[in-house]
Image 1 (cartoon, rainbow, N blue to C red):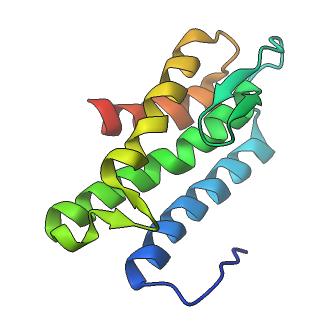
Image 2 (cartoon, rainbow, N blue to C red; image 1 turned 180 degrees about the horizontal axis):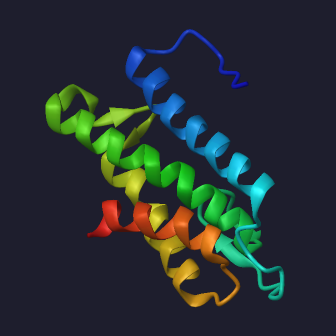
Length: 127
């Protein structure tokens, strides 16, 4: 179940639904198999929360924001009026993803499920 405050423009609803659907996907996979092995208590700077977070929450945020950012980019490419959605430009939506991607590349704690949530999204984002 997903909750959101209304009223919102349709583009904002769509972007938020992509983001929240990604969270649900992550949580469903996590019930089956963990995304990381828990062996490294390292906390990585989260540009989303502006504080240190464990690698599982970094991959959680990367996956959801990483699915939403290309959607936002594609929306803006189809119509320039959508360059800014939910008070973020496309560039602002992508900025924190590079930082989180770097953190995920540094850790050795990701299990195959964590890599499955990270690497395909990273490929779509950064090529």
